[in-house]
Image 1 (cartoon, rainbow, N blue to C red):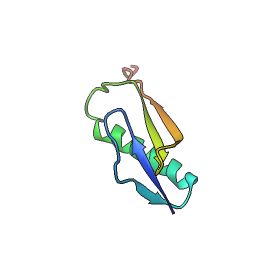
Image 2: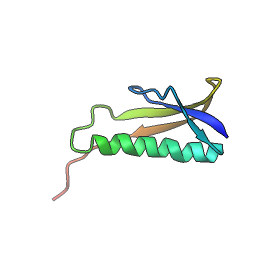
Image 3: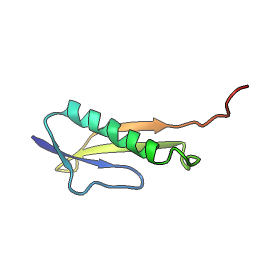
Length: 76
């Protein structure tokens, strides 16, 4: 298993997570993003765009998930 690290503009994962594949790292990146969105769901979003960057143990970037959030008023 390889160890992957997940970083956002505000947070960094120093320990990393041991995962079986890059596909598993993609799923974990999506979970990290979803967790951040859910934790701030009751508040106006401070940033409209941010990223989850995934690196391997050598610090090499292996993928980047870009998140774009737009909060709009409900119609009607």
